[in-house]
Image (cartoon, rainbow, N blue to C red; front, top):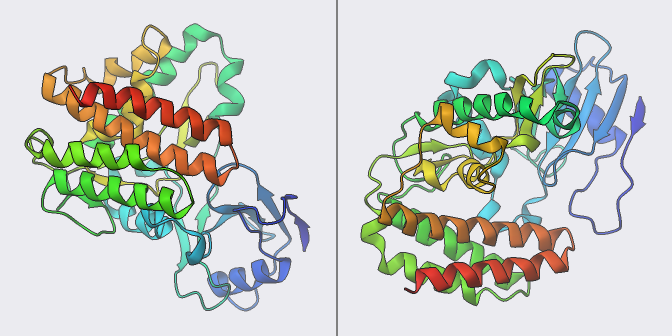
Length: 329
């Protein structure tokens, strides 16, 4: 086997597999006679460890390996299983998604969850979008708005992560989510008093949160970094969507996609709303948006800590402080 890994610092969050482990995984998935020609670790993504696998016939496949259970934050527990549970609901965008070819959550081989998926066509959007003239980006964001709309139109049975645990009300799902992020921050030795205060505000303002009565699918992490573009297309054309492991049932306005679409008004991103539809501008929606924003920042703080980005952690504290000023009013 030709094996190409990525050199990482000792103790890095993403842990590689050995060539022998990859061969064992592929034999488990495709049969004892399976031969791996090459395995190349991909540098995209900051959570799972990902490899492009050439089996010598047909298209290469993608192996994604979750972190060891003991390294997962409680707010990010079993994300790969959450994605696996989400696939049957995502039929409206199925042609854009990789197909699951095999999955193993038994931990019998390597002590970690793993999944093998088909390789999507195209080029990662972060690598190609900048090569198009800025006016053409509007078409990209219109496509992204259409995809987000299709995801958000999917109705679910309860609030919370698709794989569970579920909650009867949206307020309960949000209060629990904020509490878990705060506990993870404290467990990592970081200050989470600001997130605890946001959770307390959410608890007091449950009536505003519970105006959301119908659980809808939230993609969780749908933005440019998890989108593929058709190679060589004259205009940016979305050919694939990946890494849907943070799906939720809840208020579409709480989705990361909506947060990113709102982040830079007056730019090409405004075209997102042409296909998605106008956001809710009511006072209660504004209150909910600040709570959602704080939850996103808390999750980003955890990720920045995991990546050793101390400046980013401090910036996140400033951001939540500003949000709390509006929430206290």
